[in-house]
Length: 242
Image 1 (tube, rainbow, N blue to C red):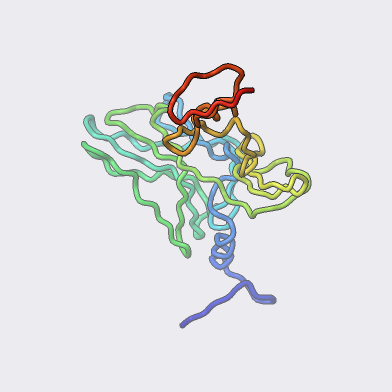
Image 2 (cartoon, rainbow, N blue to C red):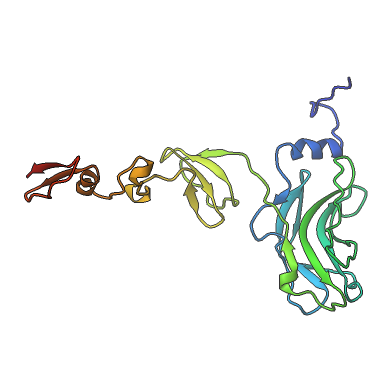
């Protein structure tokens, strides 16, 4: 058995060791809902990525401004192909993370997206978007781009005052309210919302309820009438004059 452990004080740490160490803490992904968001406008064979930052195998990557990639020429008429735009980590390259396009295999039936290379000690590809390339196409329409990004996970936190710039899906315990919360990308929400009477369904008698929404109607559903006038005789009915 070859055991290993790192980091260790006063010793060097290789890039792959650091990468694997951080990947065990933070999942690959964009830091915000807009970072690297893919889009196309039908003006050519290009796909644009919005600016932003993310992390891949523990390595920070980002685009300060919008970037674009060119989709390879379309297959022949009658065939379709799925290409995948990825952020590729290659420690032998400069920079170590680049945006590239993986070309799929053209098909006359149902095309499949190309396989990703994900080697913890070598090349690692994180998917940004799939692009459906139709036969003979000379441009990419917006509807042909499928977003495949994920958001990077963050450690669970606790706070008295909510963080001002949380990432989507951030999870924390609000010590001021004593409740668990998560951020949905636009606002903080309670992880387990409070339930009010209005949230509860009306349960029919066949399922153990009364089918009523008021106490008076609930009693009547059980055959108990509390009222001033005689409700009329019926088997199993109880009238309490009141």
